[in-house]
Length: 310
Image (cartoon, rainbow, N blue to C red; front, side, top):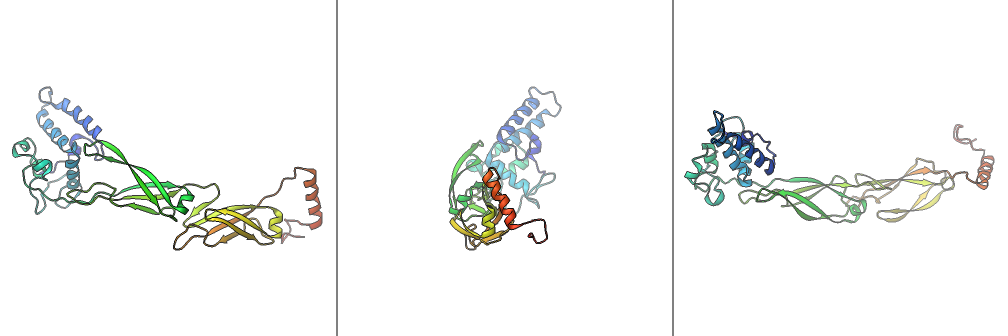
């Protein structure tokens, strides 16, 4: 039997929403209604678009048609003939037993085979589709965990779009790009099958001090010339708490130091990498200017000479 692509008949895309399907159907129905249309094929076209709308306006029938449409190898597919698979009984049994023979007679054999008759129908038990989204959290939540509320957009039983709220538990130590799975919160299943899942990809929002690479954290630490020259213990505020960093004497700008285990927590916690950056005090007073001149005379330091010292 001929496969009938109801999306092509109406001239809509497979992802068209109910409002668009309704709008296109009404436009075509006005154009091809046999009582008013002067088109030579008005009656057959009107039957075709009415049949297409009968399927696509109903979320359950549309879901069944979508599965047949997307399943090649004898189960159906656009642009060719279609044969029901082995074990198929007429009709899916929608709406308390499906259409009666009288109801189905106005439609095609393809429609009647899928939706007509009173048989129990082919059990197209199908797990619901997984849905994917991004959930954005701050660095503090990535460290300590917490709860975030998200809005899920879906199509209700009436075919209208709706939203529902879900509370998502964020585990402590979740990393950039890691997935959080919400089981059974995705697309609805068919024929008693389980619903799909929602897969949330974690995106850690930019932090003013720390950047995230995998499970490691990176930061730049300004230090004064005397801290670099003499060495100093500097107290740092990190997401895991306050920690002391020992800057060795003679440290140069650009030196990178590692604080092991101070990155994102977990079975294998990340590290915190600190890059030193020399900050030069401005010579904005006579006293500071004099101190700089005295330092130049005492040290005789010339950074352009080989080795950096004279």
